[in-house]
Picture 1: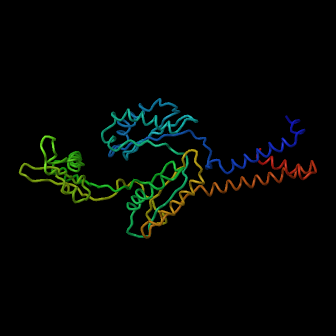
Picture 2: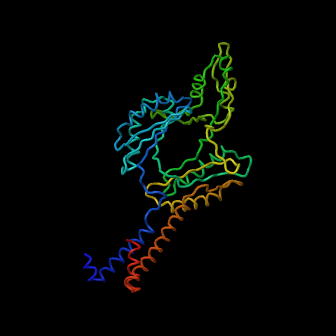
Picture 3: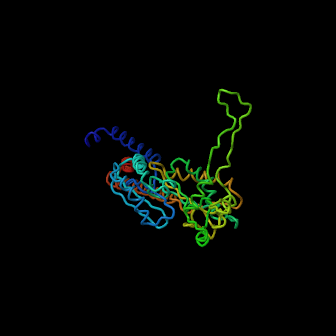
Length: 376
């Protein structure tokens, strides 16, 4: 092999040029990421059981799900965790080399088969399945200079106006807004009033489900096909209540003498956040913290550039006083790493050329061998 290259220098030059050309193409076209894909794929299963403690969460939710997920194809091991906040999480770690998308589908099928074993409240809240991405790509804080703007408004603005736009950026694998601050109708029960009227939290829940509903009343005067009808009326129902006043007037109990006990008699009703467990601030201002993770096989630098362009475009439509800040961005680390690699390549080129020149005494041969060493 070596004799052929020595006797045929043209062939050696052509092969070296091909290697250099392929190296240049690879340098500019290969996906860029902060760390190599050496961690095994993971799939997360998150279940919410409002009002449940960790013991109840384990017995009624996690154990049935673990029994269904055990033995899913490609599974390496499984771990679970439950807190007293009514949230439980199961992490399924798969063998290295398995397709994360196929793993997520297999987990989804197993969870669907075990849904009938879960409490109704968990089924109503929904069991969320997501493919866990290994590293955070960016950390964006949305904040406002207006003192009247609170974290509830920022979270919902980000959830409605920013999150859908960023999720459509090619290469964004996962998007999350820290802290579930979605607007919700909060009903703060008064235990002393409930005891006085002989009511329980279950009675309040039943009244809410029965009176605040989505219904289809149908039509009046619809033709049966046998007799002609002059008029047809489509009945409309206002649907679920949307204001605290409407919820406050819900009847939770009636007395034999014809009196009604309404929700406002035993509870305080207000429009607030769904939960209050996580807070996010930036330089003393309330903020909505958006975390972005990279999709498998995407180019991290290109994804970050597209996200920055999208945020710059969204800034034009933000309310007065609202801004965003990139609190964490791995592109700086990537640029520094790539710059270091390029410096190393040029240093290797100079050193190899110098060493070859010392032994051969020919600048042409030294340059040729130095170029070939760059992409070996």
